[in-house]
Length: 295
Image 1 (spheres, rainbow, N blue to C red):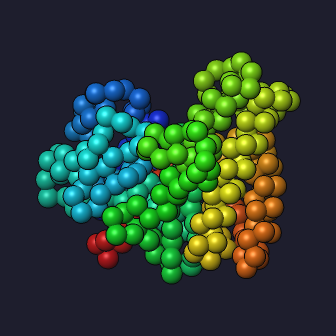
Image 2: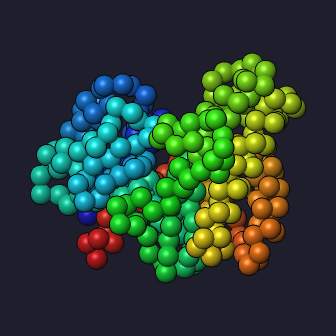
């Protein structure tokens, strides 16, 4: 059985064919920063592929009941009928839909850094902030498919910063890569509009870059601690492009997280791991979920 997996994010849409063991056989991607023509580009790519089943992991919000997606950072897609459109291209193939954070959490739990753990939070730190839950060894989706969409819970309700989702003070307005770049520029940093450039400047000691990353890391540590407190979880796996920056990001994050955790009372020991599957986690998680549905 061949699975066609899609991983829809704010920067790119990755498409892959995976075998029954969830090993990627073919992989392609397109940019999702191409207003009005994203679907045309994606449709052209999909028409050249063949698979027995399809699994779609998408940035949220998603709507499992109606098979639609409304990714906050892809504003031209609102209630976008992704399941119906993909079904037209692959008649007869079962179509699975889940959140991209849930896909990452599932992949890391079954084949990555969280193997053997029954309950865990998966986190994606990239152009946006995604999250997913594994509870009792299974992906937990919630009623609409948006469980652990924690990038859009407010950590600063009196902030003047409005999130793209419309709320004030969301975690994502402080912790996602582009917002750290934006804040660094406000401080006086001069560099490319890219988190990798910001991380490079921070490694070289640029104080504005260091401060911007530190603030983003503090925001993420606060948000993760909130979720762990609510659900009494003790394992976190963190992936996404920002997390790949290495020690310049991990050191301040772990410092802030340890401080937040200590004040969280009952949490005690929490294991925090970097994701092992990196950029392929969403594709692999989607494939795993599609297989589980048939099992």
